[in-house]
Amino acid sequence: MLTVNDLHAHYGKSHVLNGVRYQLKPGEIGTILGRNGSGRSTLCKSIIGLLPPTSGSVNLGGRELAGRAPHEVSRAGIGYVPEEREIFLNLSVDENMTIGRKKGIPGAPTWTPEELYDLFPRLRERRRVKAGSLSGGEQQMLTMFRTLLGNPLMILIDEPTEGLAPKIVGVVRDTVLEMKRRGIGVLLLEQKLSLALQIADHVAVMGHGEIVFEGSVEEFRANHEVRTRWLEVS
Ligand SMILES: Nc1ncnc2c1ncn2[C@@H]1O[C@H](COP(=O)(O)OP(=O)(O)O)[C@@H](O)[C@H]1O
Ligand SMILES: [Mg+2]
Image (cartoon, rainbow, N blue to C red; front, top):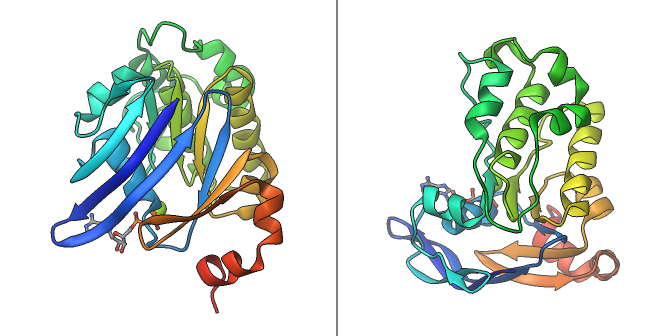
């Protein structure tokens, strides 16, 4: 289980995370909704060590990770798929996949490149092509597959479907559902409410660097006050 407790983070003097509490269990899809600038990406970066938190706790299965370097957090079992597609443009698809491979944590679900190509055969067809010549959607899937080849226990995915065609959004959805089926805990940050609400097991809403709502998809849908106050542009 991933437990974030009273997490604070700053960019210089600007206090961006203001005591975040959040929990994610293996085999569960959680989503955090929020307006632009509410702090969702910053939360991911603080959990994985790109922006070390100023205080608070990030605990994975009893192990304290707050303030650890990104490679240590990754080795402990937390995968991260950033908003900016993170691949080597001059290397082939296959080479990018190979670089992602890690031994992984005992007990974590493991993946092979061929299983991942089965989820998105288009990428298999292009396996010898340089990543730089892929479409945006293909690059997004390659970024996600590379992270999965690190065999994480938990994965944080920041706005994977931003700007993607509906067909590729379907591939993202199927891939996330396969992660859940294999027992990975998935934190999905999405702009498209429709995808998040279709597949999430629980919904949180972030406002001013705090979690201001937590509940089931049904509870979220029924809560007009939360939506108008924290999400819809008035
Ligand atoms: N690198 C940065 N330096 C300074 N401020 C930043 C930086 N990145 C984000 N911020 C600020 O932190 C706040 C939260 O941003 P972010 O976590 O990106 O929100 P979200 O992902 O929910 O849109 C915003 O006010 C944003 O302007
Ligand atoms: Mg963001």
